[in-house]
Image 1: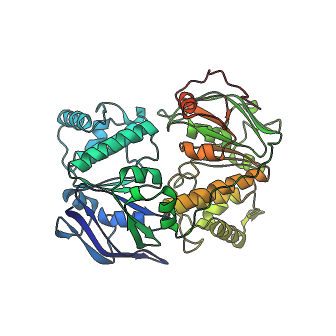
Image 2: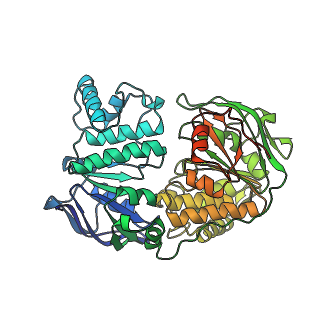
Image 3: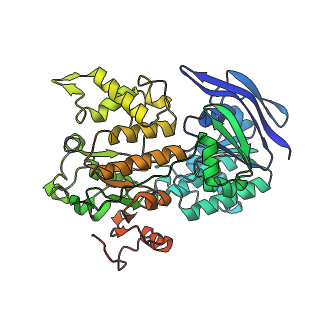
Length: 506
């Protein structure tokens, strides 16, 4: 196969860390090439250099045999390199066509652009109406907007960073069909994902990074998911183990919780009811945009509700705010880690202080205890293997997965009675995901009641005692996870809340 992109000796260092160290590999035309590695292995920095967002300190690249050194993304796009980022860059109040126009250098008139969008979307099996408001789209449809914006540039190399993190299994299959069609037409695809079974299904070759260096390459179809994970981390992968103990008394009771969404494009909560016992994990699944953020806000106190809608050990707490709930050991970790769970420009010590001041006693009589805050941040870093030079580094300097480990670790180490987490392993590698899941299971062994809101069904099946599904702001009756079939889960996620079920609330 003819090499499209050759990367030779790329090196990039930041204060205290070498993100990429003498990285070399190549991508062939029409190839789907996986880039694998732990969080902090250097994947993001590498693709940012390829896309012109970061300038390498050393090394060089060639594209179609010619020197390639983009000074900015505009230059990369002009050379035929496009990128679909993990986090969407879309405006909810604008239409699909208007959002796509904003990402083009010289967009045609909207009517002409709308025709192009219809044509390309039909060609690649990504149907999308150009006049629809982005705020009304599902997460999977928003992903299509990002992809169509790239396809309209007629790229020769398409970089995709965690493209399936918010997609349903059906939407993943549609995406894969599109990528295979692109590859068959000669487009090269550089694919980053922590979902190793997807890598095995889709990709032709894989390059493995570890601590900034290329350590191996392989045909992923010839490896098991466990073998790929072990190549990434360099050791055998531990499987989360749970302590077999019966659940305790009901700790949290939610009854007829209704909450209008403050966001015009959000989802209102409608008649949410469930109970949660000490030492139990309640898994809540659903397609993105069905009320997950709103539910976490109601349970954490960010969006107070009717006082008696939420009871902690029989006491009404629905009207309490986040600080008051933290004081009584009801803690939460939201999905959006950078900006919601952590302040980007604050250090890890400062971010630890933001949520742990009450539980860890990091302030007294109006004065902050900086040595104690730093010690707590260091404990989180060490316990959860957060890859960072130290607690003085800003949150935005961490890779997404390492920041996720810090955010979850910060809450776990505060000894909660109730912990609510949304997407706890989103964007983290297999080793880190296993460690986070084990930490949640260890909490339940100590009597903590845990709610895990996640779009990863495998994760929910692995660690949950009971499962419920969110659909359009409604929660299905929780059911024991043991014995649930994928068909039943699909019905629950699709809104079949009135199914006759046994043992709904044991």
